[in-house]
Image 1 (cartoon, rainbow over the protein chains, first blue to last red):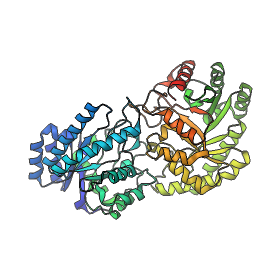
Image 2: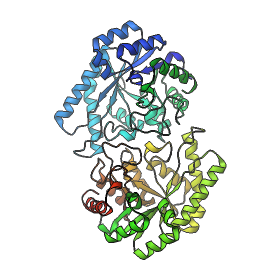
Image 3: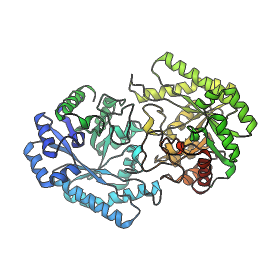
Image 4: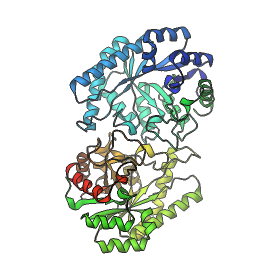
Length: 275
Length: 275
């Protein structure tokens, strides 16, 4: 088990139950030391107000989620998408998050070329580096599950994230977010996590339910599925990652319907027994 | 476009509309030269009766689908599963199919170890080789999409299938089935198809819908999704594969609800324009 001081609960885990102030209150009330904020919620409450709330609460931030979708074949659309990511980086800096979770974007139905979408995503990241440096917020490349490759992320494996990092040569400002739900199935995961090493700047846990019913919103609580979470945690730790372990559960049919204190209680127990 | 003589329509594509005799009739009526049979349907009609029907119809077979699920941690369960695959191989031989599609099996919730499940699956294939040789039916290792890794197939990539083939050293009787729907997202696909070469003994097409709503039963008609099917077809052809192109569409919300002749008509048109 990871030390309890490493627990971060991602805001999306209580997306449906709590406004941002209610969410921060729940974390404080339950002694949770850290969170990662969900951009839509932050914008709804206001970036400056959220920044003040976080600062006053003493809660640490492990990330800001998310920016990206830069794979459009249309130059103007792609430029607008990169501008939107720059605004997300500014917001991450305002709330003092160390990194922005970067979601590459999907395949453009207009060209149906996954190779070209990947090339455009990589170009997009390169273009964003100066701004990320200027606000001192890391771009955390997050490989997402191949089942959402078409619409959300052509970055499907840690191997590909490593290849992009090799090409970008910007280790100071571009890192990799490893999400157990997205990568657990990958036959190459052990080797690629080891290769990623200090690039890993964010680590997310949730579980894969055997009876998964949705491509995005049916993640399981740690221990309720088939992922060997302790094995993956040990891999990222062996690679040099010793920071927060973020619990990030999108769950429209279960956890989003429950009382916030109950959900946090289960998370704290499973953090001890199943991570 | 592939030559029309290479068209095979998998029985599952008309799973809900047709009994086996109705399905074969529809193929003959529409001049479709080849099919791959769905085991449940064959068993429902009878193996010997199906064999006679196929022989009389002049329809060729590109495969028999499927056998596998050999990853149980329980020795007795695993032995029973392998016996079931042997029966499937016998049936494939009876209907004169060249190969049996092999679906590895998922992670056993009792050990939650994907690495061990992969090792057991590989052992299972090795154990089945003598029987496959005795009935002269190839075992077609089919990597399935990572989204069904937990329950159906820990064989998630063509790279892993190639690694298993390297270890098995039985190229005469163990091959690889490449299904575009399962592998299109893979950053390594071009290299691994080239590496697979003559191992490729079966090639399946369908499309990935941008608004996919189910993990197994929402495949799209070729041309309706985001997969660059001609690019993948050219890859397998460059690797040496020149046999049938199987159209395999699981579609509970669309194609399974349509008239068989209409579905076949659309398939024939898309085979020309989108494959």
